[in-house]
Length: 178
Image 1 (tube, one colour):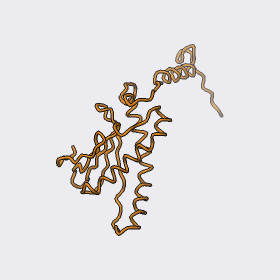
Image 2 (spheres, rainbow, N blue to C red):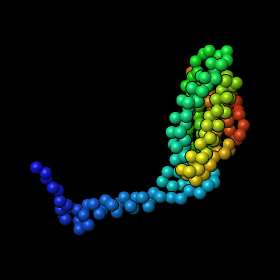
Image 3 (spheres, rainbow, N blue to C red):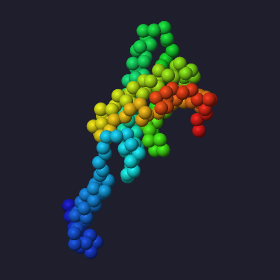
Image 4 (cartoon, rainbow, N blue to C red):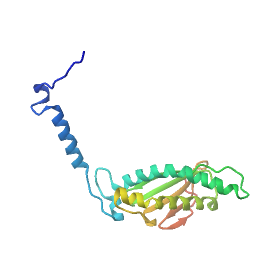
């Protein structure tokens, strides 16, 4: 047999539980809603979750999907050359640096030379900036090279091999990651 549950006026109040729940959802929606305008200073705009963090999270999901494709393309290109060693996975972590208002991309791998790392960072930069159409549609802003910083961390030695900061590649002085 089916049992019907009715809202007891003493427990739910005169408005009923459903009406209170709907009001709460509408109130929370208006409380969390905001308007984002194009402009890179918007990345650091305060809110429930800063726009920069939302963009970084969005980019991370897009980057994860695209990074496997990049690895496959690199593998295919290598088959046409003399390089026969396997291609390492294309891994990156994307974060928002609220102090600098930049999107940080940290690549992690085992490459030890600057010459080997630089093409990886250039490809990561190209991939991230290539998502500007999606970012613009989702958040109303676009990123430029000054809005992103990249770094490559060698996981075996725990050293940062190369960085891309202020539109320039920089070789750190044996910087060890924290």
